[in-house]
Amino acid sequence: MAPSEPMRALLLDYGISARIQVIPTGLPAERFVAGDGARFRANFGIAADRLNYLQFLTIRRYLSLVFATLVTLLLVLAIWS
Image (cartoon, rainbow, N blue to C red):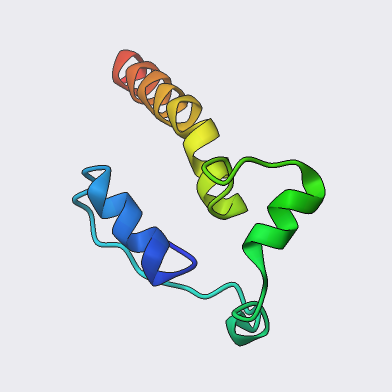
């Protein structure tokens, strides 16, 4: 599952080959289109290359943890079988 088409594309770029269903978060995206990203980053002292969108950062930050957990789970299941 992915909350948006851009996230689905990112997962495909990571090499995920399973079917990815887009299930929107329910937030009205059109309300955020007019945001001023440059002003937001300047206000909070964030470099332009540091914030694309929070969801991307969250997935990137925890992707290795998710994969490590999955591998561990698969190994445990294989041992118990």
